[in-house]
Amino acid sequence: MSEPERAAPRAGDEEKDRVVGLLGDEWAVIGDLLGGITEPDWSRQVLPGWDVHDVLAHIIGTERMLAGDQLPAAPEQPGSHVRNDIGRANEGWVLALRDLPHADLLAAFRSVTAERLTTLRAMTTQEFHAPSWTPAGQATFGRFMQIRVFDCWMHEQDIRAAVGRPGNESGPAAAQALDEVVLALGYIIGKRGRAPDGSSVLIRLTGPVERDLRVVVDGRARVVSAINGEPTASLSLSSSAFLRLAGGREDPEEALGRITLGGDQALARQLATNLAYTI
Image 1 (cartoon, rainbow, N blue to C red):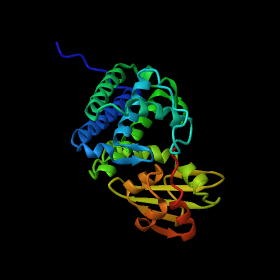
Image 2 (image 1 turned 60 degrees about the horizontal axis):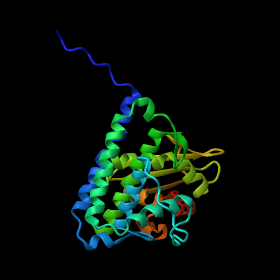
Image 3 (image 1 turned 180 degrees about the horizontal axis):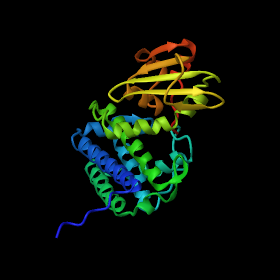
Image 4 (image 1 turned 90 degrees about the horizontal axis):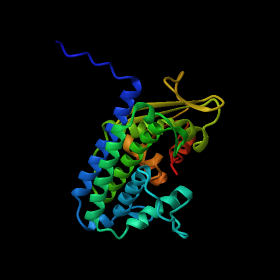
């Protein structure tokens, strides 16, 4: 008897497998990266108020929260680097895990991410795509996990920059992180960059992820597949620099020397210095 034919995966199944696979791969990369750093590296500042140890504690805390663990009490005076309620909640996990030895923290990261992968893989397609709160508003649980890929990849890059070990700037996780920013590109160009009505913008990413991003403003700013004629303003820069700027990881004035501005120079500069949009 021949082996029964298997039903082709539905689109929802394929997306679930893709996103869960990206998360698993990204967590493995972070674990390998941190398994190879030196003891002093753990104390290198990564973001305002956080060193490498703190960033990993933050990632662990988010996954523990998603696993159903109770959030630690948020500090009453968390520090000037905390600017909103989400940041205050994040700080609770960071402080709760700050005194844990680095090796134990890394073991906790590997444990919670293994647990989370088991849970995600066991979810049905309906559960994965069920309505859910996300950091970007009400959407689906699957959408939340897409954002988790972005968050984890960005924090991986934060750590790499702090310890001087660049890498993983191309490939599926980097492309997913870029896709996340593209979803906000209308807001970035229209609201943050204040591109005027009737204008068009080309952002050319020269690599490691190569892509042309086009936005037109016709009442509202929106991403389009093509622009009629020459863009009003253009920016040309690496995908890595673009993602760091969109994530607020770099002083845009200092980054201008690595960005080629085209078309309306004043508008291009205005856009280049207002790419940050994350909280």
